[in-house]
Image 1 (cartoon, helix red, strand yellow):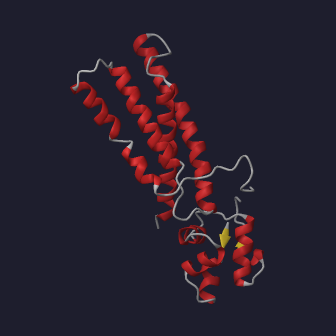
Image 2: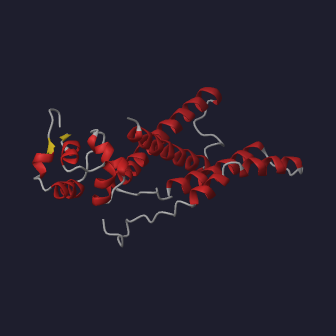
Image 3: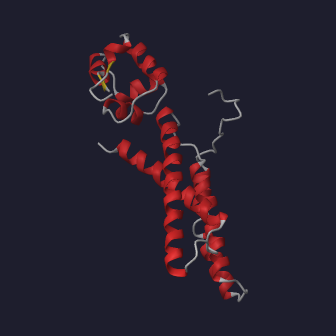
Length: 138
Length: 66
């Protein structure tokens, strides 16, 4: 695929991975800080803040270039996205089923864009790392 | 798919790193191809064959089930 194509995804410099890791403890500290400063925040809102930050963290990790970005890594990225999406669908299905069995309804307040983005990015990252691990294992 | 990259590498006295640098991929990719964990693209296969100066079908061979 030509680099100028509209389908081309420009990747971030590997240094962004360090930035991404800041997004994991940051919301936890933020939520604890908000609780201590007695800001009126519901547990659902706290969860959404955490999911949102973690989604950004995993998103940055998924969009950062590897040290050597060759065709094998590109094929891993493609497979990771497909696998991640597949597990997202099953995961959301399982959550809906649990919700239905417990509360007699399919939908729940926890099903937000932040949760879905967090789960998708986390699954994609896990699938990508798994493939890299399997390739490096002798 | 089977391949004889390891044999050709030994014949040409090359390390995985040497071959990786010649064809612009990581050493890990060459290792995965040799171990049969990754099937290279046509472009990469042709580049590897060009390095060893052998025809593609001499380097790669289909296995049962491919």
